[in-house]
View 1 (cartoon, rainbow, N blue to C red):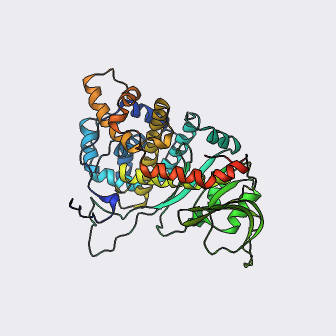
View 2: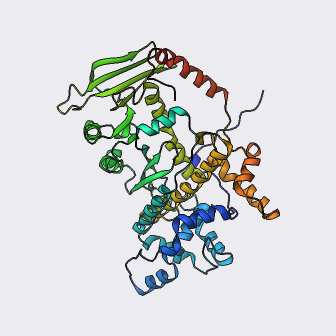
Length: 449
């Protein structure tokens, strides 16, 4: 009988990691320079302080700080001390070799306004929008994207404890969390759209409702979880001609107006919510219920027309909401956002922006691989693409003519760039087809996603 492995304890985001920086990659660096354009940083100015702060600001200018913080993520440099060695011996990104002390860099991360990096993120986002991502999509998804201006996912994630090299500075002092980030990403492309940082790690997601609504354009659709559920938020979507998909809170009272479709394992109906409350939901919503295994799941949307958004599509959209959790996992475990560089909210916000900037570059590379392999983006393993950059760097040392996309395409199976399709996936697809087969046959407007 095989011996069972002992279960690992502790936070999986904070397990051991490599202490050696990853190799350089000319293609990724070119994309970073293209989107960041460090030569245009002059309009971003900051307030000057004391003489020693002025000296640090003259040496560690904004282009230098951007190269350092993005390089920390892109090269997976494990500490500020290691980035100092890298910077002095070899340079980093667009920087020539420069001598800087650890204390100066640490203090600079606390003092340089995070607002400057947020403004930089806005310019990067605008440049990303100018470069549409080619996607391998089914006919159903192509039709869905034509019906809605955008399809976004919104969610928040709490950052890990403020630590120093994985050890709490003082055991007697209670550790505190690093805050909370709120993200919006595109559902199909997984490109980051917008972000916010909240110092309070225990803040409620509902404080971001107005901000989320202001970011979503008219005719757009947003998918979010139960953390944002409140009736005025739903009404605001309908009043402003915006759409949402979310889950039904368990104890929500409602009455059924009419049933659109019904089967043994699904039900599609129009309902009025909040019948026992003084402030009910003023607009009707649509409730789609589906039985998965032995459990019923209930989803809400203000798209009342099933020809615009079918019941299977409502369920599938919410199922794909989990992809933002995958993005959070990648930024924390793979790109090091679980390891906070400084114990200061200003530095934490800078690290968040730098991490998502490089995540956007990595996402762009995975989108190119999706097109090259003619596979949907969700079948591409972001982690294995990132880890495959090491093997590409080694091949590049032996032959300078090797190109990134052809190399990955040739060795896709060996590098594990495509996610394995397992038995549970086939069983899930079979169950999905069984649930909706009756509905599709009775209503031609319904289609599988």
